Image (cartoon, rainbow over all chains, first blue to last red; front, top):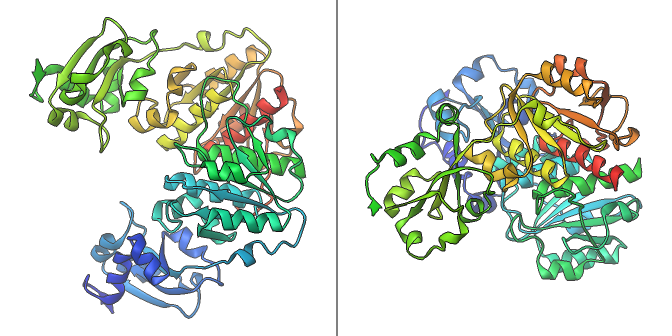
Length: 260
Length: 260
């Protein structure tokens, strides 16, 4: 049966998940596009898949998680619920995965490192930080209250699938987070223009965490005060600052370099 | 006199400069927003400034380049010609600056390094690469045919003013560019997943240039064949690739690190 009505309850659910509040209320998010949908790991619960009529006819459903319902809709309906201009005709409604501090800070090696982002607003920046953290083997990303939602479609797209690869906690209370990290012996580094030392001057092979601040305001005073070390990224040229995801990338790659 | 009509010839010019073809035909581009406009260096030719009625009343025009015409328009007109949702009421129409290979490759020291980007499509990525290159003291950015226009408003915003700080050449022919660089003794590095060595394994303190490829396809075969060295950015985690601007940032910061 091909669903033709926007009033179908599942279709209404997909539409309302475009809003952060509804995503939070339902603990769900939408993954869209062939490659991204096929990358959903088996330990994520897919509530249902939606395929456009056109895709449904030929799609090999063995590529999807077994046991989840598959709903076929008219091409017109798919276009209406899609978040993109040129939809690929496949999406999934997925249960959000919740990690606790205990999960993420359950340190098993001396090599773990973390990224804590404070009030990052730009979806592309947050997605890119998550993707880079994944590439670097970061143990987890912690995101403070006031940041963009990790399940925002633009954030998801920018992660390029990395959203599924490492633990992420949102809506983190910074004080609580840093206190728990310090108890675990994790060195807390804040990036700050007034830092006296470069990332290259620290031993980053030990367990550590890096605080990355808001695009315009940088880190809050509170975050700076909590840090064990202030570090400064050198800028021998004329630019006054770096993009937040570049700053995070430069630091994470210094961790990688020191550990090779 | 406050201009109230969209048919005024200067106002029509600002509107048409939203299109790349018109920017190229007129050799002009639009800089918008208080901070960005005030950062325009004196060696850039401002054809005219446009201020909204509201801003015009109180604005200190000493902050603008002397000698350029200032046009006041109604708030309604400004909103129509603005590229942003919440316009700050100030923009400038600026002459594009053209650099030749000779300008940019007129090597004066052994420390110069260059970024060559091939078919970068995302405005945010190109703007961020230019901003990071500026922060790192890069000697110039060369952009091949098929890339997004550097005067695209989103590119300009992402550069955060760095567009004014270092020489940039667009619409570059890759073969010609690399040949000229090799004549100058510049080592050509291509980032490639099949590279055998990390950036950390090379001596990047000498004059060098880095080729950065398209977001989806990476570098072309042609670009790879031209390179003297293939380098690979380590990815100890699960991500399969990096965002193009992050890859560029990691490499440029390795140059900075080695030169400190």
